[in-house]
Image (cartoon, rainbow, N blue to C red; front, side, top):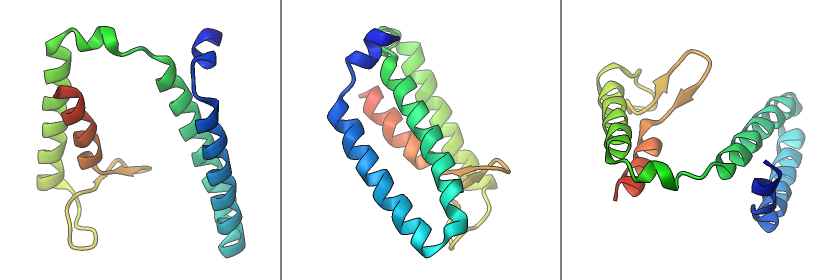
Length: 116
């Protein structure tokens, strides 16, 4: 794990920290109640980013069934969003899991890039 952290880009984390601090400052001046919620999401996102950057996905790319499986899962999520998602701002692009909402189109972008 320590080797994986050494290989990561420190400049990226410094730039990310500056952007996070600026956005937290803006949020705290506009709506102080949202500051801690946003800070919690930043901490979770940073932990996921470090974890994913530590994983080497190159061995998984050798197995075509993993790539096609991920692609088919994303296509299934897109179809589920089309059929079952609630209408938000005149679109049906958000899947709601109760405590979190996400757009499958964002996952589809990554899946298509990895597939090709």
